[in-house]
Figure 1 (cartoon, rainbow, N blue to C red):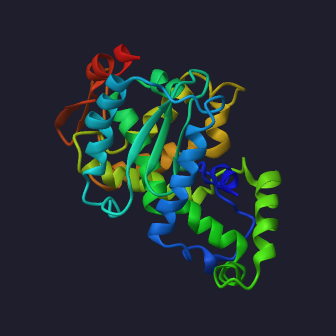
Figure 2 (cartoon, rainbow, N blue to C red; figure 1 turned 120 degrees about the vertical axis):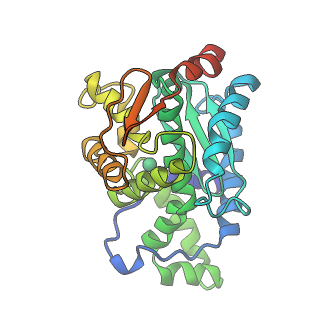
Length: 282
Ligand SMILES: [Zn+2]
């Protein structure tokens, strides 16, 4: 029973139901998200073969204090008093990915950390994952997929056999479905909003995609394919994030290797800090 939940919550979204009315309905409570996340985190901790958690307190502390907590400090992160926000690093250089589970946990692979080259870029990705948690996309999709009536019957105890069927179906079919575009767009735009309250460039989430595009990774089979299997449409997302920036006054960006400029103000991308506090600690 427990195991199914983490296959479905890896940034995974079910798009089989196209009923728009159900899009924003979530039958789960905030506390359900927390409880679900606890189960999932336990499963991950007990599966070091697939999810080798990196034991590097210095690196974890640096990412936590320099980026994760700073993004969480945004006033637009609304559930931080209920959710148990926490970041973990997975020791796998061949995977460029990050994912979130309900209730507050974010996991980032070393492959992604090594590929990025600025605190702004990592902050953008972390903001994106926090947005999936804040928007409760996993439990929203659970509601959407199974339907309100079925979930209500389970909650009310009228239909216990359905639970077994749900477990079986999740195992065979749903583990690796992609996020929906609307959830990805929402996570990108919320990441932008969170980062506006920080020292980071608000559009940081697009730096990763731009770099992938520059390196020719987007259309090849590569470690990054894992990322795109759960985070679709990189080209469109670069455009979307660029539009957020322009529409919110972050136009005229002329960033070079270390800084970006908008509206006459020059700010840093924190590339040297990324080397000092993060890459050199790996
Ligand atoms: Zn995502």
